[in-house]
Length: 252
Ligand SMILES: C[S@@+](CC[C@H](N)C(=O)[O-])C[C@H]1O[C@@H](n2cnc3c(N)ncnc32)[C@H](O)[C@@H]1O
Image (cartoon, rainbow, N blue to C red; front, side, top):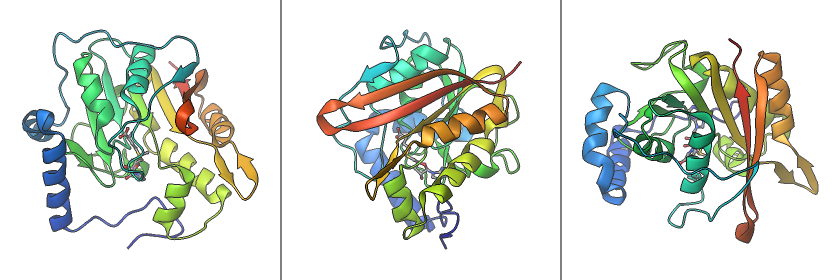
């Protein structure tokens, strides 16, 4: 049963729903599924070698067109944003852990650019995404996950409206901020010293007020000893969609 207080906790879907999700992923993303299924037994989604260099948008304001086929509840990042994120944070041969991977879109882009990845999600949307709770990633680690195993950790939680929907009702902005704090504290230890953590959020806009989750999270990162190395705003002007990327460097 979903916990209304925690909001981000989800019941493991029944095996049947899981099979349906995998079949759906296989239909829509056929190009990657055979290799992905193999990768599932190995853990990491291996990089395609030699990888190409990802395209990176310059500066700290990025512009993108939202993914056309995505359902609202998936909230995927645009490929252009993922490429720019990788170009900014990871060398060829780097290792990525994405703890809120959804359909695994970042991993699919990463492998083209010579990056190995491990993807987890409470509700995996692709065969190679492991069912794992980000909050307990290091206390109950899936195979291959250990302290210091990643050059880059990505945390991209549900936006506030979706979180409220998942939680089953209004739970308040502060509860959302707290949930985000736990979501980043749980897996932070997978980042190797001098590695990078990227947290991706949107501001909360409701009831005539705006709450900038990013500033709360910047404080939370600073308290964990993480240096804020960059703050990027990725916008899709046609839709007013905005993603705020906090890019932190873990101390050596
Ligand atoms: C915004 S979506 C991520 C989209 C993904 N980055 C992409 O580009 O396709 C947020 C994801 O966080 C997952 N999630 C929420 N709470 C979680 C938790 N405690 N542990 C792991 N995943 C969680 C949701 O299931 C959802 O797939």
